[in-house]
Structures are given as structure tokens and as C-alpha cells.
Image (cartoon, rainbow, N blue to C red; front, side, top):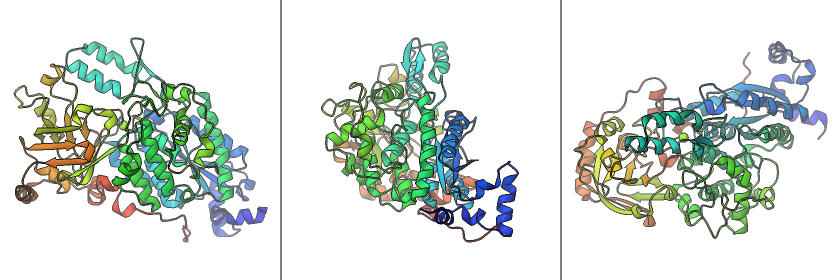
Length: 580
Ligand code: FES
Ligand code: MG
């Protein structure tokens, strides 16, 4: 491509490419940062979309990460411009980071479209930052590459490894059951999070990092290199080089995010024992790109796929071991060799196919990345459940569930919301045993609001004390990817949106049948209709003010990815109007 042609093809030339009043204004103010004139003469301008924040501890090392991306961009002849966007930190943000995933995606979309950039590097880490940035970038459709911050080193307690999040759930139950002291519980805090990075279990952050890599939106190995490993910074540097090439090649996100890539990601999610949150986030990303994706695709594509990554919460190891064992390329190689990769030819950001990137990937440890014939779980797909209790679907993660509970009939113990649950679950007189089904309402997208990760309700203390470790739990909430149990989540429609979950009463019989994808409330149809009518009269919606009001009015249900109705689709990168 000739220099002149390249220059005129650049999107940023619409800002910096003219010798008139507008060009003067766009360039002049930028020059106050000490930028020489030649930087504006046709170099690809690369945004570095940074979710750095000291309140998002998982992304707190991102300034250093951005510096290494910049080195790569400069080396390749680009002009890096770093900009901040809303940062969703899972650990601090109340009432749940999910409430602001869509807000962040709007910030990302408008920041990219409204500003002079030809391509963008998406710096992501903590759970929601990955879908938020991919959703926003997809709606603009410029060349984009994901650089993940990487997982924390293994947590340590009393000389043993402990996994992010998963250890908290376990230690808390042990403290409540009296098996460990409160002193030990509190002592675990520091060793649990001892380096920069995201949760080191196969929780939602690691899952979404794997999804970004499986979708083809990052360079190989992006998902697993530990945050503090020097090779993470090499990958950031190489991604900086690559994004400049992508701009020159016109390799936009819509050329990568095809239906085929999503099908590969769904298969990979089963192989890694990934988080249920991926169901919601992949749907939302696909929606921005106009790619059709349905809950049943998770059954059709994922079912029967063995989970071969032996990581907590489903298995034994952590992300550090996963990287040392060969990382995601090793998993994809195993799938491909077993004819389990639906679309080996799917394109990725480095211009090669997913299979080209992985066919010779070394695997160093068959315990961590198991062979297909010795899987951790024979069928690791996400189980989609439909029935009169979840007409628009619900999900369950079989690899985190107890096999003996996956076909179960039991009497409901109902909690009207999370506060009611917290109050009632500790009642020593609560009529509950290990065969009961714990049902919680009003924790969905509109009900909580924000669909918090409270679906893995802790068990009644009196049952914990008896050594009971799992029960069937059902709600319209989500659960952390680090959590486990026979937990039915994402029931749609949610209770607050008129879903039948809202009319379940104490003592109703509920049937869970994972093998047949069924969730049934054993109450006569007429009775269900009568209760629904009665409930519509009495239900109290949460206050609609500020951003929360916008959220409740526009959030779609879990089966639709919880995006805002008005954000679905790709709106492109054109901005015909000038600002002056
Ligand atoms: Fe940020 Fe888990 S809390 S990745
Ligand atoms: Mg999480």
C-alpha cells in the first residue's frame, strides 16, 4: 500500500488529515502533550483502552502493562494514545459489578467512536472488564486486540495452595461449621491474594480470558500467563506490534467475531470447566456483532465435551499450573486432535487460524491438561434447563455440581430475596433437610438489580454441622465462577419480571432433571396462573432513579445476555459531524 493511500484510508485522518480550522484544532490541543508534528502525518493511531484502577485490584498493574503495549506500538510505527474507561472491580463494587458492565461498555463504545483512533488495544482483567470492552469495541468495529492482565500467583495458606474465591467459600463454611477458628479464617486473607492479577481459579475472569483467546481476539497464551511473569509483558509488547499491522490490514473485529468463533468458544468453555457467567457474556458480545447465539447452542455444541482442565473450582490446580502445563493452546490442540474443535479454520487476530496457532502447542503436564480419554468430567458442558419454572431457560454447571443431586425431587424452602435468605437460613427452627430445594427470588437483572453473584446460597448451619456439603439451590441470580454446588442459576424470566419463580411457595415440590434439561414446579397449571395474577398485584419494584433506573427499564433477561435493549447491534465507527 502506498504511503498516500494508507494515510487517506486511516480513520484518524478525519481528525488530523486536513490543513484547515478543524485540523488545526484537533492537532493543536494534542500538541500540548509534547507531540511533534510528524506524529500526525499518517501514523496509525492506536488507543489503549485502560481499565486501570486502584479500586479494581485485579487491574491495578495495568499502567505497567500499558507501557509495554506502547513499546510495541512505537516499534511498529504507530502512535499510542492511552485512555481510561469505567473499571468494574468485582471485589469492591456494590451492589454487584454486573450492574455496571453495560455502563462500561457504553463508555468504551463512545470513547472509541468519538476519538481519533484507527485501532484499539483492550486492557482487561477482572471479570466484567473483558465482556464490557469487547461489547463496546464490537459495537464500533475497528481493529481491536485483547490484552489480559493475567492471573495472580497461587494463593498460600499454611504451606498449601489455595484458590481465589473458592477458598473463601470453603473457609467460610468451615468457620461456620466450627471446623476452623475465626483466627485462621482471617489469617488466610493475605496469602490468598499475594500478587498482582486476577483470580487464579477457573473463575469468571480466567474463563473470560480463555473465551477472548478462543474467540480469536487475543494472541495465543493471553489467557494464562501469570500477571507477574515477564512473558505477560512480552505478550503486551507483541500485541502492540500486532495491532498496528491489523490496522494496516484492515482486520476489524467483525472479521474475527463470526458465529464459528463463538461455537469454538462454547466448546472450549466446556473443556476448561468455565464459568456459567460466560453464557451471559458471550451472548451479549454476539448481540453487539449481530451474531445469532441461543441458549440451546450451549447444549448442542457443549454437551458431551469432556472437561480436561483440572483447575479449581471443578478440579485441583490453579492458573499458574495451567500456564506451565501449556495453557489454552494445549487445550485447543487436544480438542482439535480429538475432532472436537468445531471450526479449526476460524480466524484470529494474528491473521492465522485458531488451529494454525495451536496444532503444535506443547503440553507439559497431562494431569493439569488431561487427555481426552482421562477427563476430569466426561460431560463438562453447561446444562440448560427449561420447564414451567424456567420457560426462557436456566443454567447449571455440571462440573461444579454433585452427581447424586442432578436428578432430584424435593420440597421448596423459599426466600423472597437475599436479605430474607440471610435472616432465615440461620433460624435453627427452619423446616429444612438435605433433600429440600433452596429457592431464592428477586436476585435477577431487574430484581437485585444487577443480577448479583448470590445464587450459591450457603447451606443452613444446622445441616453444615451435620456434614452436609451440597443441596439443590435455584434462583434468578448468577454465581461466581469460583463457586460450586448443585446450583440452578439465571432462571428466566426472573421473579421481578413476572417469572414463575416468583410464585413458588414453601413446601411446593420441585423436580430437577439435568439429563433431560428439565426444571419443573409440581403445581397444577391453574394454580400457577392464579398465583401469577395475585403476585402481579403485590410485587414491589426497586426504586427507579439514576443509572439504576435506566438499568431496570432497559436490561434484558439472562437468556438474552443482560445487555440493554438499545445497545444491541453494531453502530460502526463513522462520525460524520465535527465538534467545532
Ligand atoms: Fe477480579 Fe476475581 S475479583 S478477577
Ligand atoms: Mg467473579
